[in-house]
Image (spheres, one colour):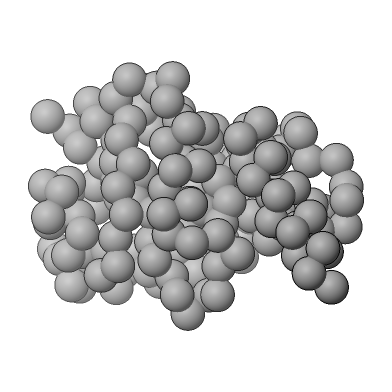
Length: 164
């Protein structure tokens, strides 16, 4: 069985992430979406919230499951018995960062390969940080996220405004 991991912070999961995950699910027998704790990034959503939103957003893809992790990607991949990491690329800047990460992961775990999936043009500019900022400013985000993510963002920012 070819098992791959699509890791990320997913704060929140976007249609760009979902596109990469769907395409990976067409290539591999099983895809594990690894939601990283990433406490150093100061995520808007808790790990539990991000896992829940990813599960809801991906529930229609049979060979995908969502798992949280708070250790090295190589350790998580080993625990999940996955030999492939799938990363989406939007631009040259993504490539530079992801290339370094892939090289480091290979040094840490020689059996772990990285596969890159290019984003389609319509998602090349899309990121979780852009979606968060749009939502914070009251912009329309329906085309960028699933309905459950849109609702969660609205709840987050409405409660933040009420607290002002």
